[in-house]
Image 1 (cartoon, rainbow, N blue to C red):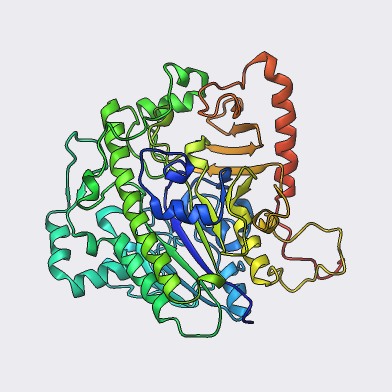
Image 2: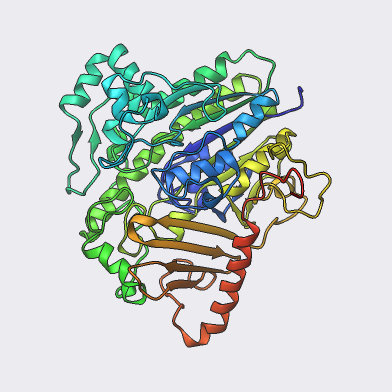
Amino acid sequence: MPDRPNFLIICTDQHRADHLGCDGNSAIKTPNIDQLASQGVQFDRGYVNCPLCMPSRATMFTGMTPRGHGVRTNGIPLDERVPTVPGALSDAGYTTASIGKIHLSNMGVRDDATVSGFDPYDFPEIGSLWQSGEVDHIPTPYYGLNHVDITLGHGSGIQGHYAKWLEKEHSAQFETIITHGVAPPPLGAEACGTYQIAEEYHHTTYVADRTVDYLENYRSDDPYFLMCSFPDPHHPYYPPEPWDRMYGIDDVIPPAAREGELEDLAPFFTEVYNDCPRLSGRIRPTKMPDDHRLEILAHVYGMISLIDKQVGRLLTALEESGKADNTVVVFTADHGDMMGDHGLHNKGPFHFEGLLRVPMIWSWPGRFESGATLALASLLDFAPTVMDLAGVPIPEGPGSSEAMPSQPPPWPGRSLTPVLNGDDDHVQESVVVENDEDYLGLRLRTLITATHKITTYTGHRGAEPFGELFDLERDPQELYNLWDRQECAGLRRELIEKLHHRLTETDIAVPRRLGHA
């Protein structure tokens, strides 16, 4: 169908919403993304439904919550039997492709995991299998994707098609990163430095190059769904020259924190700050000198500005392909990064804004409104919005919903089309976030409304449930936890009740029943 739009999905990894100029950050330079935001709809209240890579990406692909699709935390592969957005679009005549990071299957396996003797292609995203040569391609269709050009991992250890290309086509550059790796930063901050590779061979450039090639050489009359997924600005923070020195510690916006705030939070936070139990993606305490936090921010800003340069190339290629007027462009991320807020870094079982709120920009020239909106949205809304715009039914399985109009919708998210078209100013009153960190004995559930955020923690070493309550209007930096305030007891009960009902509303509703018995 010629009127079906194409989709260009640009996804970054571990990218906070406020690390963009269009989100009010006056220090960072992101002119191309800012321009995209000015031409489309920018959701200033766009959230993830789990602040980890695999659950978030599985939610985007399936339209289900983490408890719905089963990828409750990192390290659980998405079941290939779960219907996906690319799969449904492919069945409807779309060409589907992904370039860059996917992360719907494991990138590594624990030493004690019982997977010995498995077929390497059962886990084609494990970087070490590419390094050993046991895996050299992604079998397609892969979760509904017809074409895959993949990067695996982060920093200087990226594997996949990118590493194979670099080793074969630019062996000197490949040898450089093997022998020289990363130059340490001037102040010695952890997990950041200068990546010893020329910008033109960096994985951010590679992902953009391959996406530009795809756009320039696409000749089919069928519409496409193309995902361009950058592995950055995920830690370790290794921009190449000259992006490593684009910002100094005096150029960045310092983290949000106040003296003594950890005393108002659960003991878990003090443990992470001083001792650090093994968190997802972090093995050190977060206590560090203030100038180290600023140096990390400076390197992250450089990584994002490099991504912005490549986004400009993508948008130029799209325009020159002649398909820009019929292409929906989405810019988003799978989760944020604490970046020193409240003394914390990277990600973990925390539900602060820096980790939960991500860029969420939708652009379709001449079709969508332009400007920022405060409408609440989440990655759970990505899939139903794409399907709505494509005119493709949500995959429900063999059952039919037509005879049972009172049953809940098959996917718990809401199509954002009414907001995008300017027909409504919001589609929901709240969003929910969930976070199962079984190895820590923690399960978090969060409700975010227009004015407040409440988070409950359960299962921590047999302790009584504890939580956080923030007034986002009066305390947007979340510096004052109101959970134990007597005057807020009624508000806490009200929000916990709303959280309960919202969790029930977002439970899965597929597959449909085939009969009454």
